Image (tube, rainbow, N blue to C red; front, side):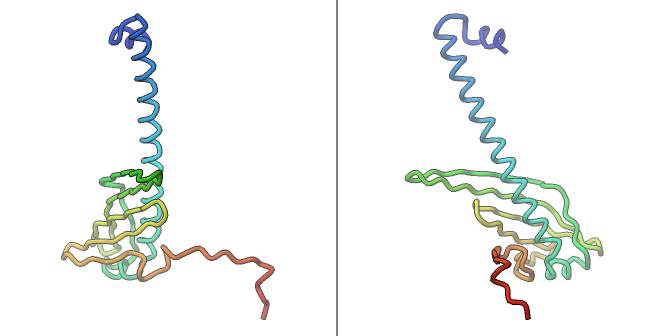
Amino acid sequence: MNGESEQVFGKGPIGAIARAATKVVFRGLSEQFQRASASAEACYEDATRAARVDRALASALGGDVTCGRVMSQSSSSMNVNGKTTTRTTVTFQCRGASGATATVSATNDGVKTRANAILPNGERIDIGSASSAFGDVIDVDPLDVIDA
């Protein structure tokens, strides 16, 4: 790549500065893309796990739910007064045993994933409301458990 960047920016000191700056910019972009990809993967995993166990979605789709690949994804990050917030959204389809489908949209705000499914008739199902898939984790110390 050095030969190519020398052709673009030249061999002099200004070219060296431009090459170094370009390298820093591309390294930063690469790191951002890696973080966005990991965030989208985590959002998809959370949403598919919830969709597969959601009773309302299974009932609407006629049985066991399988989830397809991500059809679209987006990620944004905002920094206000030193506090960074991120938001990742993925969209994919689920299919039930009867062949019925639903389009699922899931959003993760960096803390929690929320998802909903839209059926072909326009009905919306909040995924996770019929199950505890997105419930809080309860940490229990085994020494605090009383055997009955």
